[in-house]
Image (cartoon, rainbow, N blue to C red; front, side, top):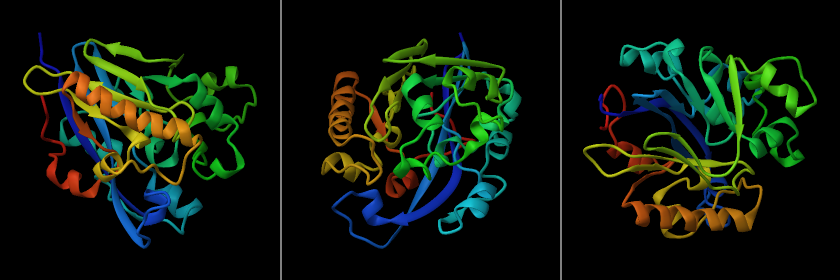
Length: 264
């Protein structure tokens, strides 16, 4: 059987204030952080976890956010590095539906989109303070259907599945509920043949510092859930002897190996 391979896809970087990254702790000032996706090349399919942001959308709708993204740092550009095209993706998984994690979903028109039921509800009818975070409406097309049950018909991909709870997506590929940053947030663990499992925190934990000093992001839907999810990530890492891959940690990103390199 072909070994599972994991690729880290570089989707560029963004800049936010330090207090947005480290709620109540800072320090303030510009903090540049990476955005990336995870491609899992598996015997049961090709799974793409998070798709970065759409630079054109940010330039038009969020011009106050500093971006740095080349044509190579997009879903098509990154897949091209490893000889693939967006149509080769069989499943799109997102940690959550904030704008810096879904900007490339629309490229994957032959995939099944898998979504937490609570996250789709939050995306479809966000709280006022979350409107900017969920403002990239390209995820759901242009019909603007009000009924969440109709939203699956608007997704670019031909198939759409709502899930809840922890979910085994394929052998050795598991989504773990880690809510608090958003209501339907997922973290991802991938088990590999020749190394420790890779546990991708998503925005449940921005950086290694966040975990070590117990700091959540300024953006959160539920404070208690956010801290509980930090603890769950600690427990999962210990239980599975997993290596943690944080969502927006520039120091750790500099140590990891992005595509075309793969982990297996």
